[in-house]
Amino acid sequence: MNDLSDDSADLMMDFESDNYFMQMALREARKAYKANEVPVGAVIVRDGSVIARAWNQVETLKDQDAVGDWRLEGCTLYVTKEPCPMCAGAIVHCRPDRVVFGCPDEKGGAAGGWINLLESNPPLNHRCDISAGVMQEECVALLQSFFREARDRKKAERDLIRKQAEEG
Ligand SMILES: [Zn+2]
Image 1 (cartoon, rainbow, N blue to C red):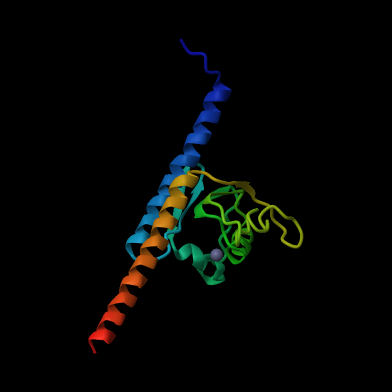
Image 2 (image 1 turned 180 degrees about the vertical axis):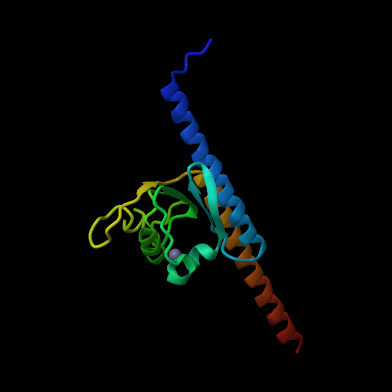
């Protein structure tokens, strides 16, 4: 018995592959976490295969040298956190077809959270489709636990310094 039409099977594949590639971006984010850096990861996918992966260097996307003259037509960028305006500018410059992100950023996101640079036409001459909130829980949890640990570490350092000062 097979009551799935070809169309719905394709749709299911698409859904699974967004999660699949976001998992890979999360893997990159965990590398940043291990290196004590803000856990943001990204992969770039063309025709179902990963052509680039990065952690934290996501932020260096805003540095034109880092992306050079990359042309990402036909590509999808999976990133664990919504890009900021500077990253979004660099992304649009590379012209990927789609940007998929996990953790939305209402305060500083430039893919619809705060503003939307990816889907606006002028003054930027490229428009990316956006999919938001893919594996959102996992992406948010990773960032939250990173910042919680960073806070705890800072507090422990402060306590130690205070203790040392008290002990003279
Ligand atoms: Zn950025």
